[in-house]
Structure formats: structure tokens, C-alpha cells
Amino acid sequence: MLAKTECSDAQYHAIRDIVRRVEKSTPEFVEDSLYVKHKDEIMAKARKRVEEVLELQKKGLICTTGKFVPSVHYPPITQYPFHSQEEVMATYKNPEDGMFDIYVHIPFCAQHCSFCHYPGELGSCSALRQNQIKYLDHLEMEMDNYMKVLGVDKIKARAILFGGGTPSHMDPDLFERLMKFFTDRIDRTTVTQFNFDVDEVTLIGEDGMKRLEIMSRYGVDRLTIGSQSFHPEILKLMFRKATVPDIMEAIDNCRNKFTCVDYRKINRLREQGVEITQELLDSTRRDGFILNLEFIFGFMGVNVDIFADTIERACRVHQQGLIDEIQLYRLKVDAYGDFQGIIGLLYDREPSLFPDFEENMLQKAVAEEILRLYGLKGNLRRVYTKNPYIYSHYAYNQCCAQLDQIGLGLTAFSSLRDRFFINTDSFDEYYALTESGKLVLNRGYVRDREEQLRWSIALPLKNTEVRKDRFRKINGMEIEQCFKKKWKKLMDAGLVVDKKVLGYPSYTLTELGKFVADECAEEFNSNEFIPWARDEYIHGELYPYDDNTTEDALGII
Image (cartoon, rainbow, N blue to C red; front, side, top):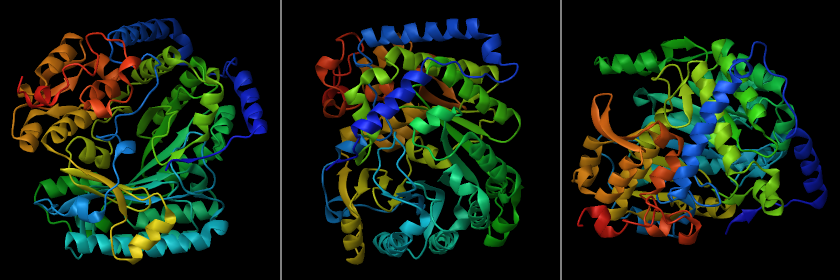
């Protein structure tokens, strides 16, 4: 059952007052702003892009309300039926190389961000301490249970991600305990990248420095900071505890105060045939963590100027060599997890608090033009860098290479090469299943041939490209044999092109297709998993329900 937060009348009116004040304001732009200098040109290009998107909406690609569901998993993560371990794992076999990407979920935060759709326990580190001890006890047990199911003494890890929640929101001694029992149970010599999603407040002050030192020592090399805005009032509306000075202090600490494992050098040595030992891994260091900063567009109170200023400020931080990646997110109003955040309640009560669809698209288009002026290009979808070799290995392996990934902790998911399952969202059930020696999953799906085919298109198309060799290996057929009418319509609409990417023949999105990547990917959802009802799309040439039968998918017609 979806858990929901509450929004009192007093809270609603306080938020509304801030939104109405901020949405009419103009930010204090950075000195010598390229956005201000080139605003007419930027806006002209951005409005042209928005016009193209509105035409695609008329053709049926985008729902008429303009609402948004991200194409992150297939089937969508909120639509998996209830299943037991026995039903989901009975026929599973480990991958031939025995390697896994690993996700670990830590469901604790100081407070819920207003845009968050994931359940968790809230409070200070000291208030949560006893509950966190209990959770870590069971997380350690869960790892042991998972290793028994896989039949391994240690997990051969490829890329690792700790997320939440706020995985760094615990006292340093507990944080070290977490890192120790986790790394004791994996083979770190096979790791190519070790990621943490973090909050700025947990990376400043004495305890923040201790946490960064622990991450540095246990092999973490890439941090994603969910800053979301550089506008003080917007940060308040997001229920973020960090201020802009906190964000900058955290960035400086991450970049200038610590070294970390240089996995890029390790990976090059591995390609040259050098044996990677723990000693070599620990002694191969670089200055500073790789940093990725996230920002949300389409949020309440945010106008084009405010979002443009935030992105330009991020570009200036990038120019200083303090961050490597800038990531854009569109606000998700409806729950995309096991919890309905307050954002959905506010939208239901007064949609005009939020930018409409056209304004959403304009904010994104303007941001992309600013990023382009500063020399940043799209890498993985929605992530912008100057160096194409800096990206999330975890995201690439799961969504593009489609390799086996296991999830540990409350609500974590495991995305395996022919099945997907999600762990329980109930702490009580999580503890009971762990103590019984079972995996803690309670929802899942073993894909049949058709759903496997759709999965092997939707995820890589959304994130990079569908490589023909990978598609052939997964499905035993050529990509040209399936969805013939749908591929032709997407190509005729200027959304998909057949070309080589890094030397590999692929189907990939055009620049226009990349801009609406989620909707392009959702064209390949089966009818039961298309995000919106039939009457919420215009029945044009890109209407997603057309040419979408099993026979279309398998190339029988």
C-alpha cells in the first residue's frame, strides 16, 4: 500500500505564500552572465525546441496533460505484482562471469524533502541511532542471506551505489561499521567505481569530515550531491536543510581535503592485463572525489530565470574544477516509489503552484543551451560533462549494458538479466524475512520473451543507445526484425536514427529524441504498462498504443 504524507492548511498557505513571491522574482545573476549576455539567442533556440515538443504532443507521443513518469525501469517500478522468493528466484542462475553491480539502500533522513517519493525514518542521527543499529544488524544478515542464495563466499562487485534516504546520515562510528561489514563481504579488486548519494549537511563540520575520511579509506570515489537548487527560497520549498554556503563547503571538502581510489587508472591497468590486488587498489590514489551535482526543473516557484541562474552557477563551479557532472531532473509529482511525497498533495490542491508543461520544457531547453555555452555535453541521459568517460558505471551497467545488479535494504531493487524484484517497504517485514534467512523481496517479475525484448529496448534507448550486438545477444534476433512499424514512425518523426555509436551499430535518439527520451522509450512499453490511459494521448501517428501487439514486438507482422 502506498504510504502518504500529510499537508496541513497552515503548511499549505505558508508554502503558497513563498511560491507566489518567488515565482515573480528575478535572481541576482552571476557576474558577466552568459545567460544574460546571450538571452535573446538562448530563448529563441529554447522556444524552437519547445515548439517541436508541442508538435510531438499533438502526434501522440506525450500525454495531453503533460504529466511525467520517468522511464527508469521496465516494467515501471510501481507496477510489479506481489511474489515470493521461491516464485522469483527458482530458475535464476548466476551470470557466467559471476559479477554483480550492487545497490544498498539506507532509509534514514533528517527530514523528507518535499519532492521525495521514498519511505524512511526521520530524525537526527542521535534520535535514530538505536533504529539504525537494528537496521545495520539486519542489513549485515541480508548480505549473508543473499550470498547463500547466490552460492558465493564473497560477492564479485563491479560498480556499487549506496542510496537512500541519506546513506551518510548516521553517526561516524555506525557509518564505519556499515562500510566495514559491506566491504568485508565483497571482492573489491573487481570494482570499477564506488558511488555514494550524499547530502551536503552530512559532509560538513567535524562529523562530516569523519564520514568523508571513512568513504575515502573504504574505496568510495564518486559522490552524487542532490543540491537541487542554488536559490535559497527554492531550497526552503524543497525542505532541504542545506544552505547555499553549506553546498559550497561540502563541495570544497569533497574536492580538496581527501584523496580516493583512482579507479580510472585501475581500470586501465586491468585492461592491460595487470592483476589488481587489494594493495594496488589501496595505493592507487587521486586527489578529490568525482562529484556529480543534481538539479530539479519544473519545481514550484521556479521560473526560467531562476533555473537558468542555478544552472549557470553550477557551470561556474564546474569551471573552477570543483565538480565533474551536472545532472538535470524533471520534477516527479506522482509517486514513483512506495511513498507519496507532499509535492503530490500540493499539486492536487493547487496545480498553478507549479510550472505548466510548456514552462517545464522551456526550463529544460534553456538549461541545455547554457550547458552548451559552457562546453558541457550530454553523456548518460540528463547528465552533462566535458569528459565523456566520467559517468555512473552503476547506471550504465544496469540500464545500457543490462548486466545483473542486486539490491540490498528496504525498498531496494534487483535488476537481473531476465527478471526484476523489489524488497519490502515495511521495516517489520524486512526484519522478519531477514531473520528467517530469506531474501526480503515481496514484488517481482520474471520477464517472458516479449517483455524481455521490450526491456532490452526501453532502458538503453532512454539512457544511451540500443547496441545491435547486445540486443542480438539478449534476444536471439536482429533489432530490425521487431517493432518494424514503430521504429519507422520514430525515425520518420526525427526521433531515432540508425548509426554507429563509438563504432557499434546502434539505434539511438536524435537531439530531439534525447530531449523527450522518456516518452520515446515508453513507446515500447506493453499496453498495460503505458503510463497514461488511451484517452490521455492524442491519437496521432506516434500514439503509443498503436502497432504495439505481441505480433508487432516479435516481428510476426
